[in-house]
Length: 147
Image 1 (cartoon, rainbow, N blue to C red):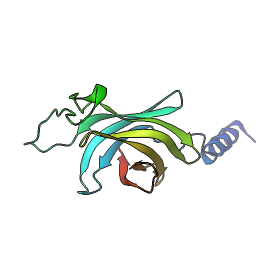
Image 2 (tube, rainbow, N blue to C red; image 1 turned 180 degrees about the vertical axis):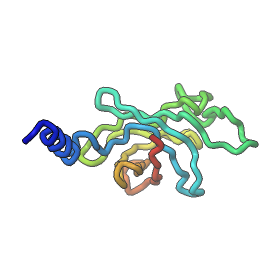
Image 3 (cartoon, rainbow, N blue to C red; image 1 turned 90 degrees about the vertical axis):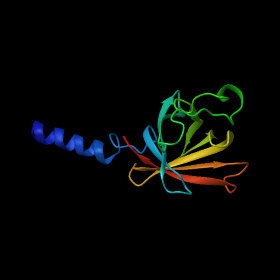
């Protein structure tokens, strides 16, 4: 085997084993409202010490809406803070094919929910579930990868 063939074989092996292409929620996602079907925000998910967090980078607002809204229904440190830049997803840890054990904040109502998520469609979509108590009692959204 010559050098070029060896490198090509190694590259093919790495790609097929998933060494380069791994389904991960890390990146920029557009969340789509499950009721209206319209995009609501861009959320950047990052990993720090094995834990995922997600922060709102941009809101898709109508011209007549407040362009820098505050979370007036939130409690604690988020009370009356700008929604843009707010961490709304935190505490999620890898659990098999899903990420569990986290929380998600809905700035529209100020409520904090338990959360889980999973990557689908070749790493292009993210199923996000917010719930109270058990995942059976909750609501889901599909987020679309932007980057």
